[in-house]
Length: 362
Image (spheres, rainbow, N blue to C red):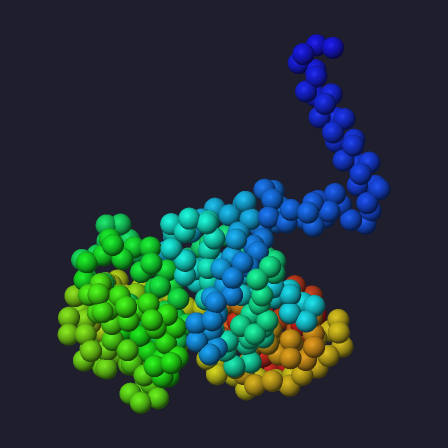
């Protein structure tokens, strides 16, 4: 046999062998069995194995994850989406990476805070265990430090908004000079990474300002200006509740320096711009009456409708569904979308709310 033909024959034999194995294992595929043996192998859907669950506060934990061989790394400040099965339904959520880039074991970490009525966050905080497999997406996000590094940096965070900032501090603090961290939490005990942040402040590595809202009230631009005297001179990264970020963006715009403020948002800004209405989920023959600030995705899930979802913030388009008729409003912009039978309009259910009666094909 000519040498050049040998590889082609070998490839054909391999393909025929895989076809035969596939017939023998139907309805599963050979890859399904490989997933059982080596779920983190190259070429498999990206997964990770939880190797440690470390409590941070009474309602927050850090998951240390060994990613599969397809993991491409991340930049400090970026986030990943994880997929985890909750009550038999795979749910996807986005969480910031909090691990340093130089971990010798190659693991990554995310820190999750349970939020009221948060199906996934509560499940992770209460039930995640070492050894569990979860699905992963590659890291993404623009909430990162630039090159060259700024001379004076301010981080403004609240609640779990400190998580991307901790990823930056753990990886890039040696590259930064003058760093101020202003963090807001209900009480001293609710400060995520409190021990590490306070230790950095004690060593003079950062200037840390804690704001405990139960005693001090909410953090707003006026209070921030009082806390940081050279506010306008600092390149600022902010992550936290939507209301705080909106107020900061207005203040920086009014000062004529909007380019110096960088924000990270994990939830859409909700505008109560409609009166809601009755949502008809046509496939499941389910109807539910909602207000104008409840997303179609949340309404469907609460009614027991199986709804596809992804990032839940209008980025990944994992939640798109046909709007058969009626009107919905974009919770971020207030824009109205209407449909009549036959229009074939597709909407994102995670950032849309009923603006009157509407029918969704779900």
